[in-house]
Image (cartoon, rainbow, N blue to C red):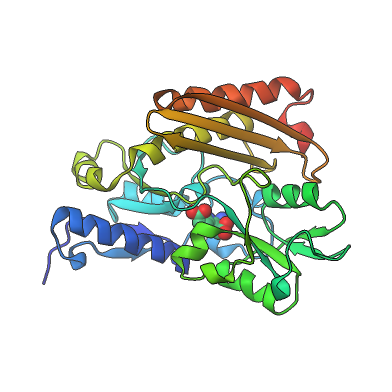
Length: 308
Ligand SMILES: NCc1[nH]cc(CCC(=O)O)c1CC(=O)O
């Protein structure tokens, strides 16, 4: 029997498992160890149990991470794999972000019933999404369509389009690719029309704060450029969003030592949009995101809460 080097914790959804197997494959190669030396522990989170309400109404932050944080703190796992998008801005003090894998495509994909594009939908068509950000951007492009709550994992949502429950939905292209479902995308939405969520397309790894053994093991598989992009996007989110109740989008592009940041906050019905852009050095990532968010805050007479 192989002895365990490090135990990896994850949620049990097909996407979470695909991401975890990617981390395990890379880590095993970096350590020169067989994959069996990195056992996977599946942990059910509160977010996995809520299927019928918008997550923003269900207690907000940490729904997909709390149980993994506890498993880390108790030493049942040594690292946890997350979609960065689902990782709250504030983690418990005993938990640290070790870093991020090289980022997948950040863009959203449109899935239209019968191959219809978003622009081609008939008036009054129904778009399903649980994301306030996606809903608001859909309304901005197509004020005449209605947006309805659509939860469930990626496969469930695709099925709801195929069965005609909704006329279309939006999913992260990264998630579709990781599940081998990229061919389900009717269109890939350009960043100029449709900005992704902070962290979209990036796999984050958390660990116990101060655990140097896990930190050293992970170092070779982590990507600094993705880390810089995430520092900017998460700083933007930290200033603007406490609650998940406001549609917020953010994207940082890193090119060598340089970074371009674009962030926005919207009214849920798409009727108002507040944007900020920054260019700067990648080492100033957090300041660029923070600055952009504060520029937007100055233009919001009633704060971010006034947008929801
Ligand atoms: N909130 C669910 C979630 N978390 C991460 C992804 C996709 C993968 C990613 O963004 O890295 C998804 C599904 C989706 O939004 O389509």
